[in-house]
Structures are given as structure tokens and as C-alpha cells.
Length: 208
Image 1: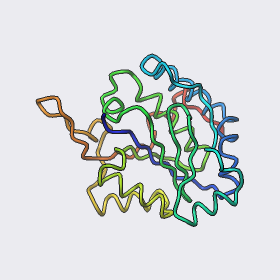
Image 2: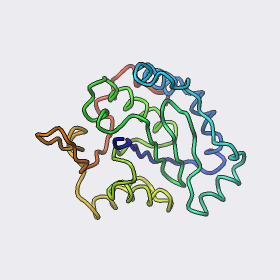
Image 3: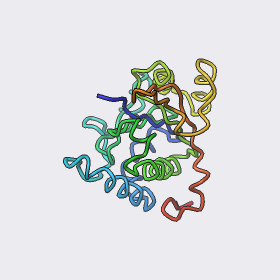
Image 4: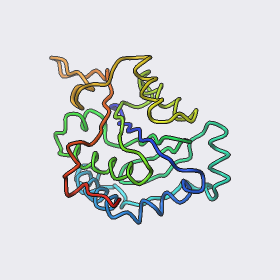
């Protein structure tokens, strides 16, 4: 079935601001442009992909509900967002994407840059400036990040935990995974994206 892609993004939102996150993302021209690009890249391979909609899962209707979830070490989630499900912790977001990590790393379908642009646009909207790309929580590496987000850890705390429990980040996105001669892949790393190469990218321009 493959390994899901997980992108971790720090945020500076309180519960009331988090409640407004779907509307905030929908208002952002940069997020809209990047999400449309991701949607266009995915649609040929995912013909049933729904249009981009930023919406909380049913039942998340107030800041009090979000705060109570955080107090229980839970992560309220936004569904159907350009192939993402965004799990919003107290200080970081775990964004799981339907595209498998091998497709993102190998970039055979030209999906990597559009998704990075979307991660950058989302990060800028919520007060973050980087993203961590890693496999889903079935892997011990990602489970550390997953648990830290539930516990309310901030982005830099998650990075320190990953470095302490595993190893330094991979030097490139490609180095997240190792391909063997028989065509099998091992997921054995994570990459911290500071989007430096997107700073002057017109498609990634965001409002300040």
C-alpha cells in the first residue's frame, strides 16, 4: 500500500485563531494558488479527488472544542484539503497527504515542488517558516513527531527530539529514502525544508 507522506509545520495559533484556520487559508491568495497547482498535479492520478475545500471535521464548531481536544492531547483535523488532512496540535500541524512518500521523494510526476509551495504558503499563514517531511506514523521516526505534536510540542522541540532519538536530518529530500538494487525502498530519514530555493519563486509569493 505504500508509506504516506507526513509534513510537520509549526504554528502560533491560539484556539480561537485555529478555529478560523479554514477561512484563513481560503482567504490566502498564495494558499489558493499553491493548492490549485497541487490539485492539478494530482487529478490525473486521482480522478475522484474532490475540489480544494478547507473545512473542520464535523463537530469542531468552537474554540472551546479545540482547546478541550488539545488538553486531552488530541489533534482536531481539517479534511479534504488538496489531498491533505491537517491534524492541528497545540503548537504544530501534522499534514498527512494521500500521495505516497516515494512519489514525493522520487518526483516522477512533478508533484514535489507544488506540494512544497503549498506547505510554505500554509506555514506563512500560521506563523511557521519550515516543514519537516517524513513517513507516516507506522515508522518509529515519524511516531516521535506524531506523539510530540499530540503532546503540544513546538517545531524546534520536535526537531530536537528527532535528532536526539534518531539522527540529523537528511541533506536533501531525495536522501529521506534509500532505493535498493531490487527496486525496494527504505524510509530512513527526514528532511527539514526552509524553502530557501522558493524565496524568489513567483508561484510561492505570499502576502506579508
